Image (cartoon, rainbow over all chains, first blue to last red; front, side, top):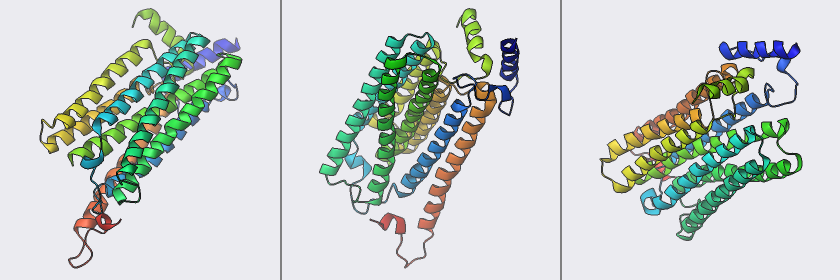
Length: 216
Length: 128
């Protein structure tokens, strides 16, 4: 009976937007209807505002070379294209992990999560390699305001990806020990949003930093 | 998507929560669209086949399109999820991001060009 009422409430919520959290969905402690997903979404939006500040800083300082190297001289677009491809493929492999989660296949989820984590590690590796080359050429963060803003923006994104990899490793252990239950589903859905969100930020980075920097 | 898929979708979404529930179709369509929307701007810039102004406009347009594709296909933002709150938060964030970035660049550009003659022009571009 309670379940039937709950379902009716759910269908109502689905047909017309309710601009409050439905009371009886509080504190049930599982993925569907728990306020965690909305809360995590609000966190992601506030994280987007951090990146907005960094993008604005970069936009203002993007031509302040102080006699140092310009984007055209130091950016290697093939390397950026490779990194973009890696991150894009990691998005769809995470999507496959989520589809496997819906059908409750623990091994398949773990496999796709592992692939996603390795692609993320490859992304961070290529980025660190790029940073190493830049610093070896003398294009250090101290060289000009443009390079300070560049390193701050791109490495903040890279740090997010690194933490995403750590989170993936934690979830691999969780899945190994407890399988796909409601709590792990909720955690995986948050991680999925986090990972796809980082891909969205990267679209901004490769467009406004690398591509528009090169044609400036 | 077949009608049975719809039925499954409805069951999953009956709590008004659609986060993380993609379909194979949404992920594949999103991936293919993103691949195209990534390849075109890189090709435009690396081949240099258009004027810089036109290239910049196209690249920004394609980036916005790709962000929307990711939002719909990968992040599953729609009017139903969480009773519409994710969409409201997303649109609000978009407005704030636009004001922050465009406003900062606009103000600082004018600050630079309107420096009085004789003053150290391009304070920003002169900073180490």
